[in-house]
Length: 93
Image 1: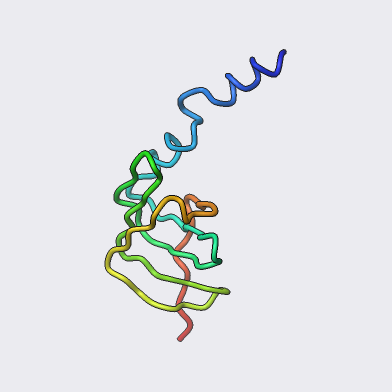
Image 2: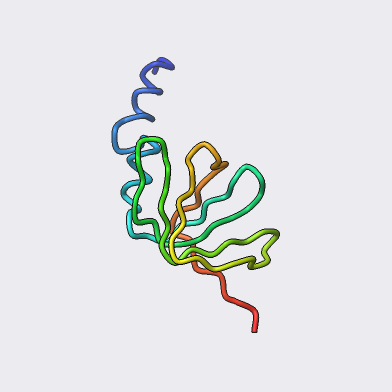
């Protein structure tokens, strides 16, 4: 199999990053930014630039909860990576 065939198979429409992400709509995700900050929440919107709106978002750094937000817009060019199907972090009591 040539490298071009392998590339076409890997990048079939169902496996393109934006398609994978949009299938997780209304799912709980974690977004890790280039500066190390992590946002967790329910993704309610994603556009072609991977700008993402999270509902019930929480902000974390070094596994420490920094803040809770009702709704957050994360600009796509600040995202390092996105983890899908994550579990909400338990708060220390």
